Every structure is written in C-alpha cells, then in structure tokens.
Image (cartoon, rainbow, N blue to C red; front, side, top):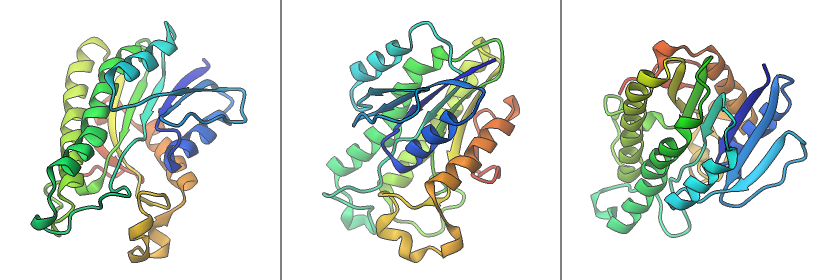
Length: 238
C-alpha cells in the first residue's frame, strides 16, 4: 500500500532531509510538507503548504489540507534553542520570562497543538507513527551539567506530552506509535554556535540523521509508544 507522509518543519535542516528522503522511496505516494516559510521541492510527490505552529488556527487549517486522507507517518521537526535575540541560558541570571515563553511556545505548546489536530488523521487499519523531534537534554535523570533552562524544560515537557498522547491514542487507535526522537547533534542553524565543541564523528549531517531516524521509525512497535528514542534506537530515560 502506498504511504502518505506529513513533515512539519520542512524548512529546517532535518525536516528538509526527511522530505527529500521519503520523496525518493517507491512505496511513498505523497509527502505533505509544512513550514512557516513555504518551500517548493523538485519531487512531484511533495505538496508544500504553510503553517505557523504558534497559531492554532494556522495548525487547524494545515490539518484540514489533508482532508479525508489517512496518514501513515507524521514527523514534527520544529524547534528552537536560540535566535538573534537570545541564546540558551548559562546561569540563573540569564533567565528571561519572555524568552522562556517563546521557547515553550515553539518546543512544547506548538507540537502539542499539532498533535491535537493531526493525530486524528493517522490511519487505523495498520501501523502508523507520529514522531516529534525532542532532545536528550530533556531527560531529568541524565542532566549532570545544568544550564539551558528553557530548552531543557521545554523538551522535558514535550516528552510528557508525547507520553500522554501515547496513552490516550492507544484507546482509539491501537496501531498508532507515538514517539520522541533524539536526532543527535546535527549540522544546522540550531547547532551552529555549539558544534565546535562536538567531536567530528559525533556531528551528523541532516541527511544521515534523517536516514537513521527513519530506520528507528520503521523498526518501532506499539511497545515503544511514549518512548524517547535516540537516532540509534536507544531508549533514553526520562
């Protein structure tokens, strides 16, 4: 059966890599690409649309684009760590309520609202996967360095949202798998200020990360629903 894929955050490095990857797979019929800045892809399989994940009306309208079609895989590849106005907090004195709220809106609230409107689109007659890009630094048990307050907190909260989705959705769609995905450190705008501190062999291209995560998605089962999985399939503890 030909599959239908949704990628939200297709203008980012990993999101674009996912669109390119799935558009080249023979068993994929359509890739619905959503991003704040609409991008045109060369493949005829890709249909591009705009979305603003900070605006629920925009998210609702984006979901309605799909119509009655049922989706096999949804990947939410959005996120923020820094922008031109602020970076991740190094200490308590860097905490700013407006910046903190901005990170929460994009990393936690936006994906939660996406789930609200896109989870009902998942197919029910076979396995489907709804995956959110999260982060290992969202693990409380693995936090040994501190800092990055808003980013860590937003990803921890996202992981809880993912767990909640997995519990609720299984009641009406037992074939659905809801995942958090840790993509590794990827060469992108998000990692640009920090990649000099990462060993070369641990700095992935977006294409490699997307390829590895696609394998994690493929190999996942209902038993994984609610888990945060690393790019190599490792389960990351909360």
